[in-house]
Image (cartoon, rainbow, N blue to C red; front, side, top):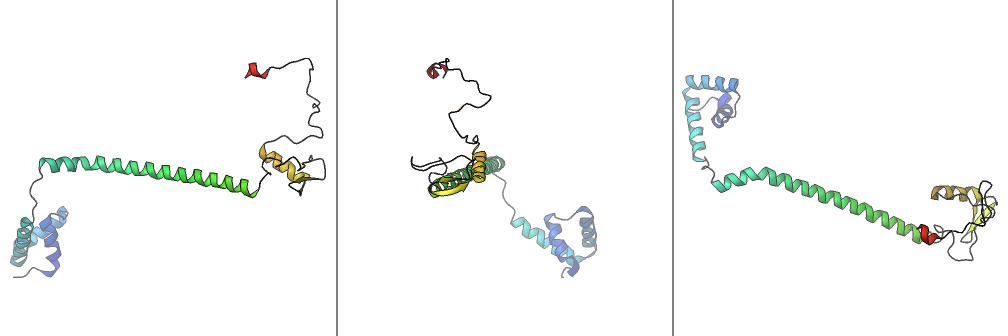
Length: 176
């Protein structure tokens, strides 16, 4: 006799113990009344018993218990390596950008390259950097970006608020 078509799949799942309690109770009640489904269930259980695994050895149990810790450790190590690779890649990219900027714009980052280039103050209408004219507003913006104080007319002249004491001798060797 063959199993009822609507119960074929349910019988296989019931044999593996995969049904919920209410569904298992319904299949069990049907198996009591249907000879074909009872035979199909017994056949499936018999096949599953043949495929039953032997109990785990002590070594296998230790491996199974150790598996979550080893997996987590490997995952953390991989995450650290990914983070290190990202930071390294970011640092290399930043260094390459700085080198490219220094190569593409030589002398502009340091003011002048040789003593022949002239840089005038922002109060003049235009400054010359590497033979190109730069207006005062652009020079002031560059100085502000670089965190520099704006250039004065006479760099050696003291500011209005500065008090210069000609008699004060500083020995920088002792203060450092």
